[in-house]
Amino acid sequence: MFKDHKRLAATDTLIGQGTISEGRLICEASLRIEGEHRGDIECKADVIIGECGLARSNITARDITIAGKVFGDIVTKGRLIITSSGTLTGAITTQTLIIQDGGKLNGNCYMEQAADSKNRVPVESDPPHITGKETVIKESKEKSRQAG
Image (cartoon, rainbow, N blue to C red; front, side, top):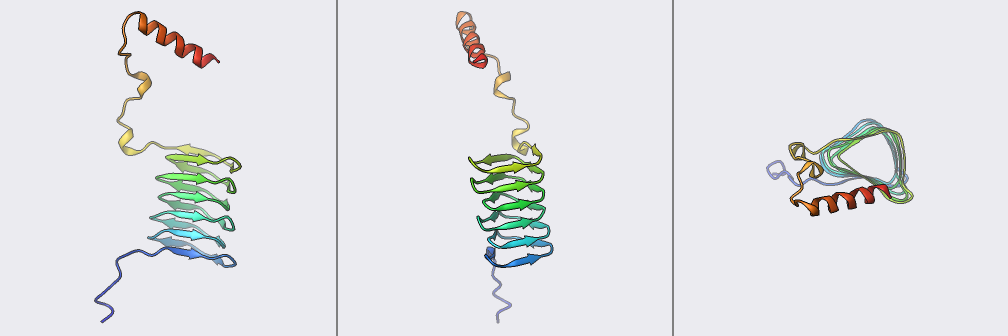
């Protein structure tokens, strides 16, 4: 009876404060760590390290938010956010990196472009649509803005 009605909705996983877990963790749904985890984490959804959380882990996930402490390498196809209380020691590979005031990053950072933005031409290389005197004025304003 119960086997016919499998739950298709993914549930979030929580490692609560005061809990210590060890080993490789693979999850389909989002993961929140308020306790401590030691071991690699592979998550197809989001990972949040809470303010009390500590991860001694290499983490691979869609989006990652760090409000606690992480010791290990991070790989994300989306966004990495280090909040004002967050500390990361390790290498990062991400598309978007946000570090709030007070957040700490000790390590290397590798930024990758999204697959759909690789074919775009950068805006700076576009030819100016203004001609004559207006082009000279615009260029001189840009140079003076860059200089100081």
